[in-house]
Image (cartoon, rainbow, N blue to C red; front, side, top):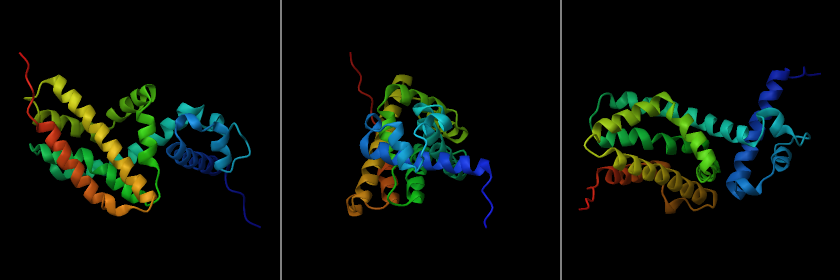
Length: 216
C-alpha cells in the first residue's frame, strides 16, 4: 500500500493542473469562450469551483500563469544581461529583451500554448495593465530597459514609449504565430526558435533606431 501524498503536494499538483488546462483552453478558444467549469473538468477536478478555491477567481488564475512563465523568462534574461555587461550597443540590449522569450518557448517543447495565451491576455486592456506592471518589476527586465534607455537617450521620450509598445506587440504576435505553426505541423514556415529570435532582434533594432519623422 502506497502512502498518501501530503496535502500541500496535492494542492500544488492541482494548481499546476488547473494552470496547464486553462492555458491550453484559453490559447485554443480565447478568454471569453472558456468557463471556470470547463477548466476544472479539463484539469480532472470534480469540484467545478476549483478555480475560485485555488486562485480566488479567473484573474488570479490568469495572473498565476503569466507570473510563472514571466519569472522563468526573466531567469533566462539574467544570463543574457550578465553576458553583455556594460555594453552600449543597442543590438546587445535588444537581444536581452527578445531572445529569452523564444528560448523559453523552445524549452517548453511542442505543442505549447503560452505564446498564444499571452496574445489573448495582452489584448485585454485590464489584464494587459496588470501583467505589464508586474513584468516591469522583474529585476532583469528592468536592467534591460535601463540599458536600452541609455543607448537611445537621443530619442524623444514619447518616441521611445511608442516604439517600445510596437516592439512588445511584435514579440508577442510573432512568437504566437510561430507557436501556432509548430502546433499545426508547419515548422518550415518560420524556422527554428533561434531563427525567430534572430528575425525579431533584427526587426526591433531597426524599429528602435529608425529616423524620426518631424512635422512643422
